Image 1 (cartoon, each protein chain N blue to C red):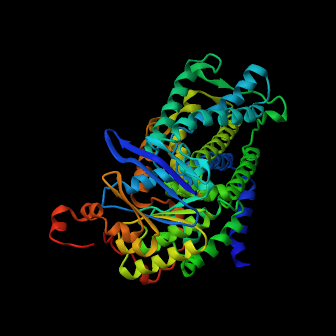
Image 2 (cartoon, chains in turn green, blue):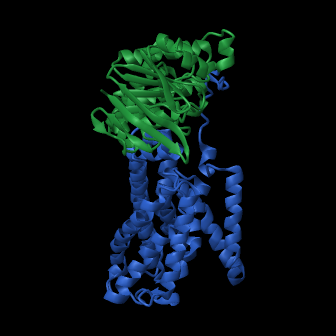
Image 3 (cartoon, rainbow over the protein chains, first blue to last red):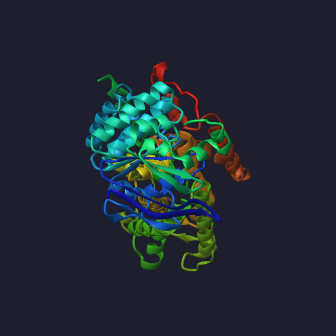
Length: 244
Length: 326
């Protein structure tokens, strides 16, 4: 088991954003975390990466208990991530952005640069290496974040709404990219609320609603689950026969 | 070939400056003062510019350097420069003590904490008999050996300061192009993103702070050697800290030559205002610094050097920002 989170709870004061959630991700798997806005999936995600400390529960990564480790230590163990609202390094070039990731395994700046260039080529940003990162639009930034994370040579890549804000064509390209990354042997966890993305990518899906897991299974099983339909569309619309 | 002409000519000018001004002690002294200020501001630049942690309390380190030098003379009879390594080591330790709790604070809070510590040390130093109290302490009145670094002319100081500045800038340049330089810039842009890529932000900020503190202390020791005197205000005063920030920001914080450019403008300005206004202008220095801060913040947030940067070529239109569609 590469990622093994057990009974994770994250409370902000009296409010439990994540309530007793558990998940196991095997090496080579693609797991989707879905749920309506405010369901707690991003909070759960941030508990996995270490950006938020858990209130209770444990997170095991690659056999090591990382529950109390800061994000940088988890990254060093091979857990990479992207951000919902891209956090590219704005003052740097596209190449330097990816170089920061590559420096984790290649301490020499020249080697790191070569590695970064290689990764940028692979994700389709090869023609923009010298461009300032701030000249990129949302799709470019999201792609750059993925490149940067890949340059750190992770075992697992956690994508936080990597497709939000993209046009349908761009979503399609991004899905292809994630497929290729997964094909390269990297375990993927993806938070998403675009159903199409989850259905076409994930083998297993976990559905959040109000901080709790309400369903899990294959995308097909989950989308026909009554509780999931109600969570997404509300009770009344379902009675009127709406479908996902 | 052509691109070596201007730097080469500048280099010769810098080296020959004391000879060119041999018959004008005022200008020789001015040259040395510019270099000394540039050492302090360049040291500040490591943590304030590159790492983006704006310390407004670097006078702590400057004062530790100056006082270490004068204390080894007063209490042990050593040449003041022998206090420099002591001041540097003390400053590294002090940087660790201040930095470990305060570098976790973001933005303004770190700045405020550094001001508080510097002011605290200033007040404490003025009540310490060991440090000469409010009167301060003086170095050797007459040079005993050459190691007392007491010269009639400012030219020897000029060359000593030039050597130290060159070494510091070389070290900064090495850092800038190495792993730590990349990491500091990443932390400055987005600490959260940097940490997600395995950057131990706290550790790197602390390294930068310690290195910065050590060289600021060296500047303090050199100051003592040249002026032969330090009191709480000239060692730990807030104006010392502010000057470093303003010089670096004026030239370009986070740029190798930014602080030097800032010192080249501000030090002559300050000397001019002192000589024309004399005692009447004592408060005016603050007014001038305040005005400069406002002007930089409004018109030149990246400093003067940014005016000479080549604008990056425009990107193809295909990838311009598209709105968030969710």
